[in-house]
Image (cartoon, rainbow over all chains, first blue to last red; front, side, top):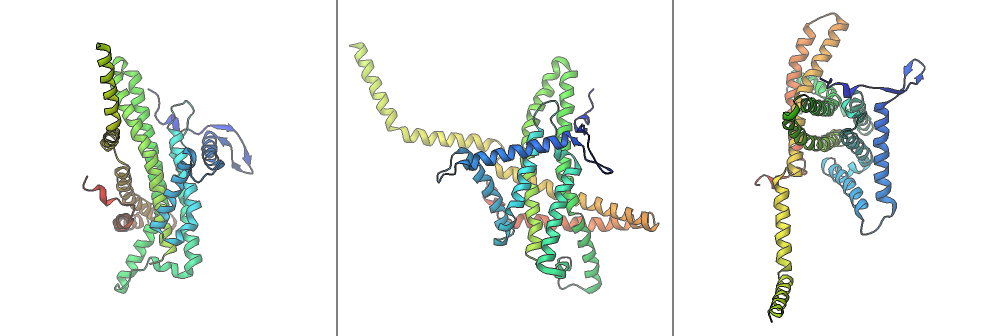
Length: 242
Length: 118
């Protein structure tokens, strides 16, 4: 039986070293690059010939952009417009990585099934939240943790708990995406090996795999949406300190 | 004679088609809508995503807190007391996180209330 974790293996395509660091060009880097090229292609085609009445590609690009803009408008308010480029980029990158990873090719790879990638994105969001928070509110940003109108010793306790939950934000953001992508791909692979090993009765797991593929497609899109939604909710905390 | 009647019948049928073109389109739109509703709608998918998000929020906070306690234990040599303390605090923090996140999701106008009746 093929190892279901084999698909997550990092392969060095071009070994490189920067000082003591290993900065090899891996299959993960390759697929992130492919994701970027797909996004760039999508956006270039969509905005190549802008018309008042949009064509199909332009309508698609406008729809995605409008989706992110209204998400920030609703969750952050008018100030949220500034962060549309950031959230838009993150959303499209996660979406492209998730969807490309579903391609049933040998060598296809899902960068977002690695916690190094998702944690990198989550830390980017977390750092942005901290920088925006301190830049806008200075040390007053710490009042995010302080409960109002609470008995002092209890408030200390609650503030500590709030601090813990604030610190865990980038991790939960990263773990959610990574766990969803990894679990889905493992399931697909496990049922895929059943198809081979069961012979004629392999038709049953094949049916399951068809249904699972549809579910994975849904999860790929929904997880990109949830990542962007939570990022904008976290930004709201920093922009509009309650 | 026969063929002529046949022809005129077809002509009538054509005229009939043209008359009911609007109704036909309405019916097709309704059919397409019904077919779409049979699957998972976009808002249902988003709702499911948000539900899972809250679950992982809770579990993740507990794990991260316990991990922080474990790290501090390693530095201060107080194993395992800080890990236990942080695990308990993590439960409190996780519950709070799940509560605030679900409240924020509810407050988000993105939340489709209109779909609840369906």
